[in-house]
Image (cartoon, rainbow over all chains, first blue to last red; front, top):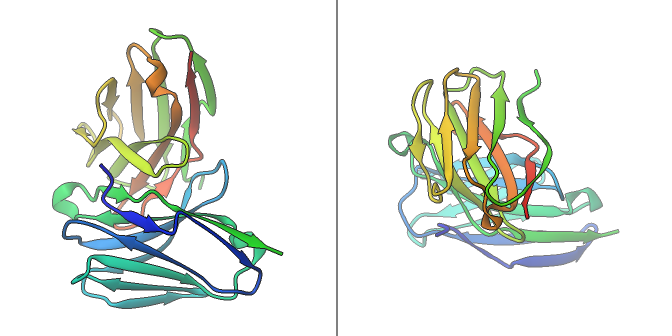
Length: 113
Length: 110
């Protein structure tokens, strides 16, 4: 079964708007990662947030992590048509577990020009 | 650097046939992983390896075998393909933290 549940499953916005997606998970984690997947392609790593961090930024991306609620959010600001993709959260239980990632079901984002 | 490469890109098998998917990475990563992705879903881990000569089962290992004879290569085998194994297969590698993914192999079993 998948560790993460992502919400919403799909999101449609206009270029320039912000996109927010959420991820909830069930067990304790070492870190949480977000990936992007363009249609028909492999996944590309976006950002990693460790369990002792609460917020992290990378360019137009902002990720938050609330370990007490076992949840994370990804915010994409000033979206562009090129941001159209599926976004996945993935939890990493740590090196003792082989740094395995458990993925959520993803959020499909459509950015309309 | 080529990163993570996968061979083949596409394959059609008949039920009962066997095949091997090859994953290669040139980043000297210790960890390698095989996932499958079904339509509209996230990735599920099939098998993984934490180093040359070692392999371990993931979430959905049944019907698959793997080998890691060389650090840079991770092979995924289907001994007797079934229609339920129709999927897109992704390989990934990592040192620690983020994983680097290959472009995927689209497999159809008829």
